[in-house]
Amino acid sequence: MPHNAFYAQSGGVTAVINASAAGVIAEANAHPKTIGRLYAGRDGILGALTEELIDISAESPENLKALRYTPAGAFGSCRYKLKSLKEHRRQYERLVEVFRAHDIRYFFYNGGGDSQDTAHKVSQLSAELGFPITCIGVPKTMDNDLPVTDCCPGFGSVAKYTAVSMLEASFDVASMHRTSTKVFVMEVMGRHAGWVAASAGLARDERGLGPDIILFPEIPLDETRFLAEVEHTVKERGFCMIAVSEGAKDAEGKFLSVTGSTDAFGHAQLGGVAPIIARKIREYRGYKCHWAVCDYLQRSARHIASKTDVDQAFELGRAAVRLAVNGENAVMPVIVRESDNPYRWHIGRTPLAQVANIERTLPRHYISDNGFEITDSARRYLLPLIKGEAYPPYRDGLPEYRLLEKAIIPKKCPEFNHL
Image 1 (cartoon, rainbow, N blue to C red):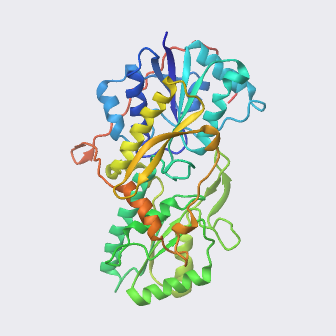
Image 2 (cartoon, rainbow, N blue to C red; image 1 turned 135 degrees about the vertical axis):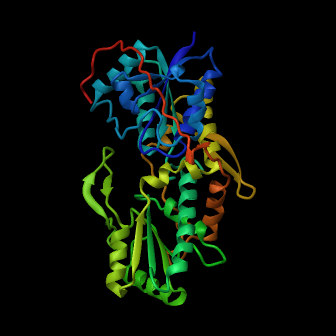
């Protein structure tokens, strides 16, 4: 007899996480003898704990088709981290209670490193609490910091947005610098890993546009050398373009923009580093500076998503279901690169224990010797990930994104008040 499945989205959303959801749904529907109904958790793992299960079959075919080109988390996401079974046994017992009540034996969790840690913990329910559950992680993170996989769904589209934004801003500043802005600073996401900042370097070409300086979290800021480089660039070119990661650190390794608070995963909450960098430059030489913080814009920009990214997100969702129906457990599908040019890849798998809570930073050989640029190796790695366009349909000049109905099925369990 088939058993039901649970899918949920977790952590910071991306432009293509719903493409992974579309892949999970399509593949689950292809295995009716193994998977009965597919439910989605409202707001991630919280949906399982509060028994708010979305009936995916109640959605219209048009809405489900639109998932492939809709940004953000269609079912709702959360930043909520399950602690160990020893610390929060009641939460795990609640998961079993809900899963048993709805005959859920398959668990697909779509997220980054912290989310894969949750997926790994849920996969241990069979041994710890005697409830048979097959748990598969579905990779997602715009930060590109999951280990093992060649790249992470969500990153290619952010990289494309970052490179395009830097290129277009370069044209703007180049046309105005004689009488206006001398320095432009663009802040991108990346707490500890400089993958997104590095992608700005793809805008640099033989015309001399794109970033002159990139500040990576992996390279502590030498303020004296940095300011001298800005001054040299302005004298040589007339203006200076800078990309800076939100996780840029000072010479002592401390975040330049830490606010003192933390998020639900325990990560330091960062403020805006771009205005800090711009202020340092103004105080040093008095240049007119403009700055921008991409923030949510970069990860929600589905209108300029990478086709490579969309395709990989969808296929990894499908692969997660195939792994489950083939008897795999506690694993995550990954992208395996076969070649750079032409870009060829296939899907492999890795144990969840090898990706949970493990952060992959930008390799040092991807950063130039002076610490301000990317190398040819980095360009070879990054360039295939932003290729191809996958535009959403438009209506009246705007992308025609859809909202799901998100009908919650009737509850069978008591209320739960131990979040």
